[in-house]
Image (cartoon, rainbow, N blue to C red; front, side, top):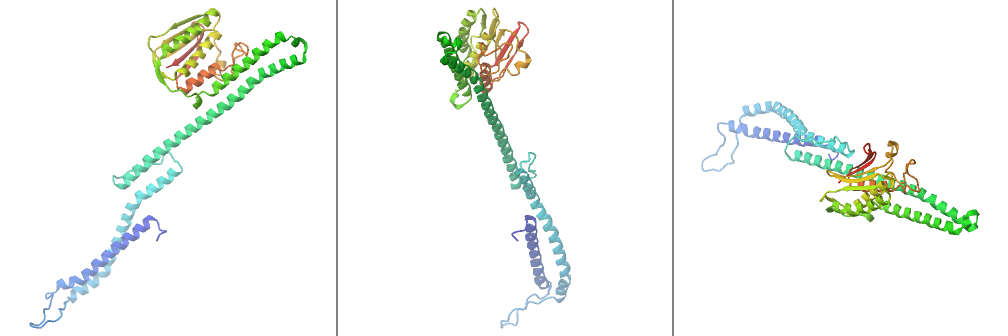
Length: 372
């Protein structure tokens, strides 16, 4: 009996109960009907004497009951079978539906859903299962999204470190070659006074690259976490603009800024300051002599424009990659380390700030836009 499924169990229990009721009703009818059909139901006995009461029975009624008993019992059995079948089916159908649906949920079918057809306990159970499964799917989706993000971050870190090692290899190799030639006194490298300053310059270049690589590798990690605070963006931009304005003027460029009196934002101040500072440095480095650098607000957008040679589309697609320097205008001597715009993109992506970098037609140059 323990191995039977729910439908046979309910069917057998219901059938047994209905047959017992039918048998009991038939037995009671067989016992009582002849008595109530008799004209002298009780015989009190002789006056003055006490005798046991005898229950008279109407033989005709008894025979009639006995004759119809097989038919009545057959009808009772048939009605019990039909009633037990439909009753068991009505009880087990929603439960079987829940079982089938939950089995589909175990293999994570997204369209699996219990049909809520009533407001009783089974209906409430179906609704609760649907809500639970919906939350489970949402949690799994969030976990998969986070897993993909973590995998992407790890891949980017590996690629970044690989490129960083490649970038460091060249200046270190060149420095070692110069020092080896100086030690062995080969040719022009005997002139220590000429090549020691060059070695110092190369070592400072390597040290600067290492510092930038370390700072970049910490972006978005717990080491570099900074809470967001509400502050005036204009107050943050003014000292940055003044700093690069002096650099631009020293290089024969024009630095224009049109800033609002108040521009409140809620961001990590140091991180957004680093990003904007790198954009300014990039603009000053590649603006043509006598060109103009403009900084202004356009609604909620910070716009930084500089007159320069527009970056071709094939290079613009890769401009935010680490250590990327287009050959036409950037090189390792005067084009930096190729980390400036990569740091900018990393910070803005971490802060979830939309940005764009595209060529201008009038005046000819590049425009960087950040939605604050």
